[in-house]
Image (cartoon, rainbow, N blue to C red; front, side, top):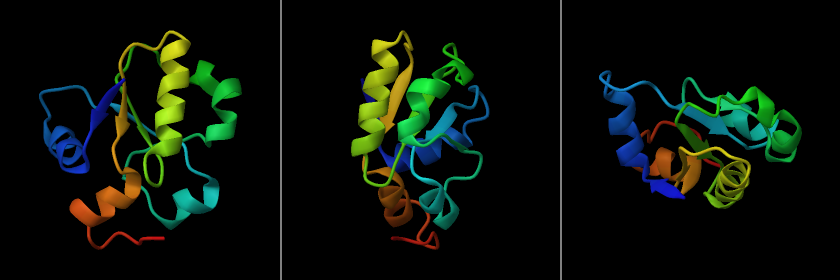
Length: 107
């Protein structure tokens, strides 16, 4: 499994020469409503097994949660199920708020 830091992801999202990755936010609805990275797709972790078919397995996928543990589990699940280009956001949305977007609400 690949890992990416919040600053690396921010830089990656600014690079228009590469296709935009799927930002797969696996947090619960209330968490996503509290804060999220613009353009993220939310599928709560517990729904991933039944909704994995909605995810393009040919696209780069970056999994996001609050601190990085749930998203790491989802990334591992996706890899076990044939997804090849899966990355986990180290430190999750909390790291993004601390290192990239200090105005983002924290919880």
